[in-house]
Length: 158
Image (tube, rainbow, N blue to C red; front, top):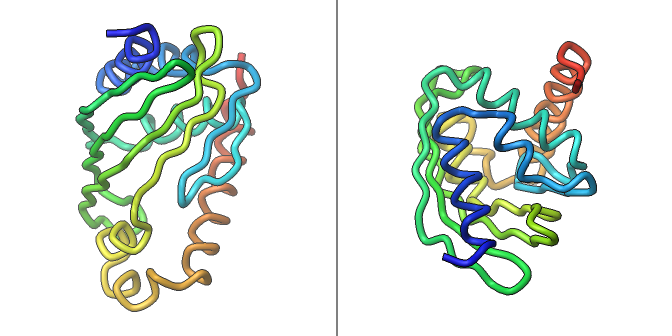
């Protein structure tokens, strides 16, 4: 395993163990994160996002595989199983991740998944009908960002 693979392996093992400080420590102070729901987060926001998701995801579990390191980054695949709190629906989200790494820290993290597949599971009939629309995607993204802002206000970083 090269050093970038070791970092990402450590990140996902920490995720499995719900060790938020260990996950947060994998990110550089200038890190960025994006996925179909949480777009354009800075380092402070991505650290808080993981803390919020782990705290709120009471039944969440995850598995990871296929970590492949390169000279300046890594890729991985991971699956998350959880109950979507708004609807009580069970979700299995299959994610492909890409990382840019510098000086042993993640500087850019991008998670890719099908928003439509996610919305059909999380939102049921509404997701089936509207999950492909920019309207629903923007609404979910704005709600998630607001929830993150509220979490950060209630749980300031040390």
